[in-house]
Image (cartoon, rainbow, N blue to C red; front, side, top):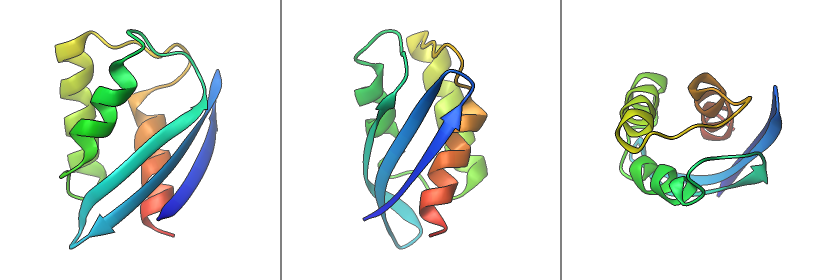
Length: 91
């Protein structure tokens, strides 16, 4: 498992993930941040599994999920998610 953390404007995101054949196969997200609805963290983890391990695919899937589930993360942007995930992937 690879890991990374990122201090965003209003919180810290910590991720652990595994990549197999250039696809995210496992992911666990923790940290100190707010997300609404609270169960959306599970949705984010689920949508990332099976996502190609590149910025464009991650950005697209997260953007679609944010819209579908009306997710809000005060002080944390989709770009912050992409950045911390890519930090872990590239370790």
